Length: 180
Image (cartoon, rainbow, N blue to C red; front, side, top):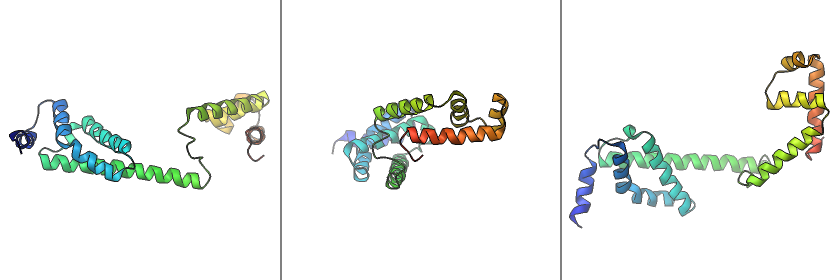
């Protein structure tokens, strides 16, 4: 053991004036242990690195919330790291459950091409609707307008708006390959 390793924890017990210096000192003192812990909790080394990075980003966002003193700092960082892992596990669990129930296709959100293709298909299906029906579907589904507001805007009755909305949804589902 050299003198430098002993001096580091002692220096960490002293408060720093600059938050950036404090975060740097926290990283130097604790990143290896946090990575080892994250590696045991995460699926891959890359995920572990992401978790450690997110931990230090949270510390950097509010350096005043990190307690002073090496054991307290480490406990705070470990608690944050574990909370981040729990959030990721919950998120993965929700996505897996939604995929199992058929609400999501695995990997659909990770591909930008799929999103672009879906958006193009929706706009193409909207373009196939008659103008009044298209306007009603867009106003209600995309703009969030209420049925009475749409009726006033277009000068029709609310029943007519509901009828166009129902037919428009059915035509959109049929055009997009869903149940008619």
